[in-house]
Image (cartoon, rainbow, N blue to C red; front, top):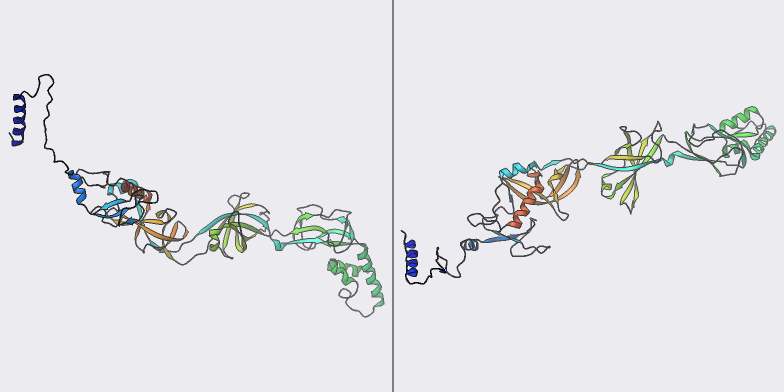
Length: 425
């Protein structure tokens, strides 16, 4: 029998012998184990108190440390980091089995050309330089209307209407009277009253016919000045038309504009001459090619967009004004720059973080400055060097695990009493 057991047995025998315990209501108070003296610290607390605190880290896992205790913006206490507990400068440690389970993937930071595509929408509009308004330059009546419907296609020189005008008849008569008196043989069109007919909008070919016939004609034709479509028609057969009154508006739809709305952050990536592709709902699968012709020098305050004009060939007239189209513009290409996949960047709104793979399951949070984006990559201007490997998949899971470890640090202890050990998977 051990010395400790012998002492306990001796105490029990003395109590029984002295009659201190009644037969029916005896209370046996026996210290089965040695108790520590009053005021003594538990063994785990002694071990923890001997460990030196290196610094205090943000409880939410942000790369922010403090040499003294403090609180974050939400009032949460910064978590102490003890010596030997986080000797990697804030690196997150993840076991190999955990890495495999959450599907961590990494990729090297490399210098590359970032190509970007800007996608937006717009509407087809008339080319302002390819429309003409037809008006009468004299006072007269429409005797016969040759083009009577809006939407009719006309050719340059096609007769639109036959006009009777006393002024036109008077001008012709003055010409023949003056020709009888003039025997010099001067140019009959460039000089004399007939020259006035050209200024009144009568075509030269009709003036030549008057000269050949050698007599005044009662009506004269008004011809189309261009190929195009009659978009507006005010002329009615039999009506009186005064000088300057609009009769027809003819538009050439062989070339049209597409006015696209481009967001403010994309304006710097667009310049005249860049290629653009347009698709419309009316022709699924068909793509119309064009070029950026002009960027309007004003912003729309409500939508924070700027208008960009794209010129499109429309020989078959498939594109109609006010059609809605989807636009793809190949943005300007900048110089090669260090870039990483955009999925590797964790953006908190205030700072941007990447997780750098340090090997052996260690991942270091690194704050970076980002630049232009395109084709799934983002430029890095500060915080990384070429050849470093960053996490491109499961980085949010690693970040979440780091935050959880920070929040529970000091609460989860292993058998040796040390806090902050990673929970076994």
